[in-house]
Image (cartoon, rainbow, N blue to C red; front, side, top):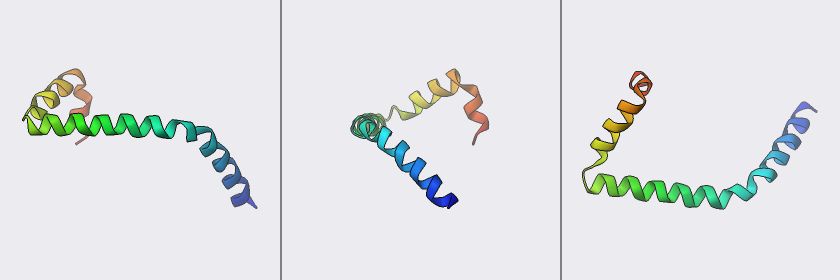
Length: 62
């Protein structure tokens, strides 16, 4: 019974987020292309350094 209640709420939330799907795909694709271009042009290290300077807490994650 608890599983049915959980799943019905979960499905309802998924329906409300469905309209975001296409936007997230387009944005994700753009990010992938941008990262690919940074890697091909050998600028990924420069961007990573800028991010580490802006957010030093990220260095502690791994």
